Length: 424
Image (tube, rainbow, N blue to C red; front, side, top):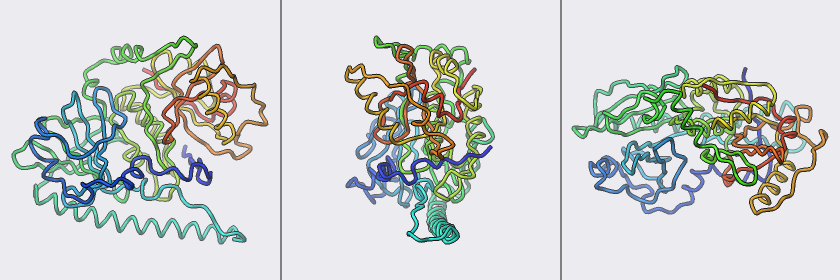
């Protein structure tokens, strides 16, 4: 089954959302912008802990016992302009540097579907097709030139790179070209997903992982992992049963709600995955839309990579959601979205956070978004529930929405299209 996520492409309040990370970088005036940091990032002191990483770093959603942060600058690395530099640390020891040079999701964003008044349906179709084609050609040129320059510069480091792989599950398996950096023991892995993603990962050669599951979890049996998940369940004095350790991974202005919510759950379960690689694995096209992607197959692959099973229902089962949360497992729901209801969720949720007791009135079906109304389809992560208030507690992948929000069980039951739970 293939499913397009059309959420918010034309909704004004969210058109102003930048790509959450890259928007901040574009507006940040760093002395490192345009500087080539290759020698600094490959220096032995950076990897043995005696030398700090350069610049200012912002924390990102981590995985298991590893923390993540991105550099608030856009330097050059290996002589090529970088889009994003991330660092993964474990117990304050640098474990991996990840440098992204080209990413189709950030380049395309949402497809601009605005058309001039008076345009016929046929003219509109041609206009949109021309926009997609123009952007596609622009990105292909950017990707080709960047990949060519990067490949040539890396061959100066190692003329005979070899292939390496990461990923237990076939659909998530990444194939790298691996370059060795002199006698430093560092491995430089080049990931080239044609006309989608261009990225380099740097780490000590002996620490190169074979799967996406964190090394601290690889040797644990599922019984021990499930016991650890149980410890993440919190019951508050106001009746919330909630998982507080699910971190938001903002999607920015991209049609990635289905991807980013999956990344949020994947990282919570210990997988070192990000939305850019999942877009490649899920066969996203360069159209500014999720149309044509294999989202359902991707969800199943992520579950298998985490050594769990995926249970999917075509409606909403609140008892199943309660069981999952009590077991320490978040739940992803694809639901119909409505701007007015979204504002109400925010108002009541923030009021509750400040000690207010206002509750939802029972929503009428006429007020609910639905397929019949052609309401946009959106993905959210359920991280808790409150039996006394008959509410679910959920997270979004939107920038600035890091606090959980609430909605009535009656509403989620009416608006849910698909519900995904991860199980042993």
